[in-house]
Amino acid sequence: MKPALILLLILLAAVPYLAAQAEPTKYFLPENILRFAESLYQEGDYLRAAGEFQRYLYSFDALPDKADAIIYKIGLCYKKGNDFEKSAATFRKLLDLYPQSPLAPDSYCEIGYSYFLMKSYDRSMAFLSTPMSFNPNQDLSLKVLQLRGLNYLYKKQWNAAAAYFHSLEPPAKKNSLTQTLLNFSEEGWRLPRKSQFLAGFLSAIIPGAGKIYSRRTADGLASLVTVGLTAWQAYEGFHKDGVHSTKGWIYGTLSAFFYVGNIYGSVVSVNIYNEHLENALLEKIGIAIHVAF
Amino acid sequence: MMLALFLLGFVCAGGPLLHGTEDLLAYILENNPPGGPAQKSLTLFSPRDVSEMKIAALGLVRFYQLIITSQDRASCNFTFSCSNFSRAAIRNYGIIHGLLMTSDRLQRCNSMGRKDYPVDAQTGRAVDYPLERYHLGPAKK
Image (cartoon, rainbow over all chains, first blue to last red; front, side, top):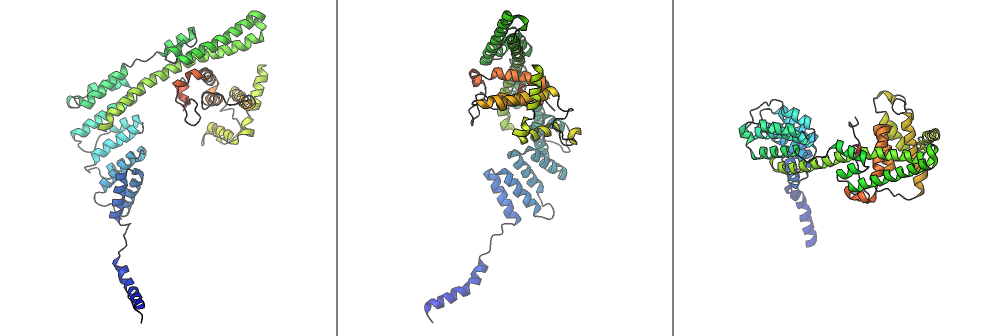
């Protein structure tokens, strides 16, 4: 027998043995799913990580030990993945299933914060006013109090926010973030807003003046020219042919259309100006709270 | 003359039927929300939802879009254009607010004021939506 053939026979005989040695990776084992989920979380792929964490939970017949930590992680995944409705629902699930879990206080706060991030400020305030089923520590109590005040700020209720922060008891009131938020609420109250009435009044006297008052100079000048030219044409028509002037009526109607629209637009531009001021302040507040929450 | 304009508007209000069925469907659905009382009869314009003046005004804007402005190049400073802004304003806020908003928009549509608005990267035109920012009064429910 040729040596090559002998070698081949030996190799063929060894195949079952070698195959038995190479154990395939069991990707669907719960611990591997958990490892994969953690890896996705670390990579910042939060929504996929949430799916894998859920798959881990469902790979058991009953909820495993420390399932509260996994549910909390799922909530965090949704929050970091900007799906705040689901994050609130997940944290709520944790509170319902494990009211005595050490993560319950944090979940309580996260629910309020998720509503806040959804811009459902009323919902957030309503939730944070519900009694807690556990004894919160000092940090959590402070966070909840600050979150309530933040809802006032983001609803642009500056007076109510200032009154709220003033009404807090000393340990919370003396906190640096509380003081910052109090300062912001007072700043929001004192913002140099423009008056809607004054803008409308100015535009009624001189077309476009209200827009110039609200720093829309170009639009104000355009209004002045538009109303002025159409009014001039109407005047010319009526002056030449009297009340039966077609040109007079057409330009007169156009002039009235632009004149009334100019007053309306001036009030709108003041609203937009004030909104810009408030939004700029809210951005500053957003930066201030970014680290704390 | 007013009657002629009114009739012209009414006739042109049917324009979307010929020139944009999707547009018309969106309009009908907007005014006949699912489960609402007017849903049973999907008429073209339900008198309960839309006034004749509104139809006429919308028709006139549509007439302008189909017949007049289609003859030259698009020259509005904004995206979406003043005529589309007008249609949306009249549809959403009624004839009076719609016309006031249209008048304001026409006065804002000048090249000098473009620096006050964000610019759409695709078209290079100014952007001024959402529409409700330019509406005075309670938000539409």
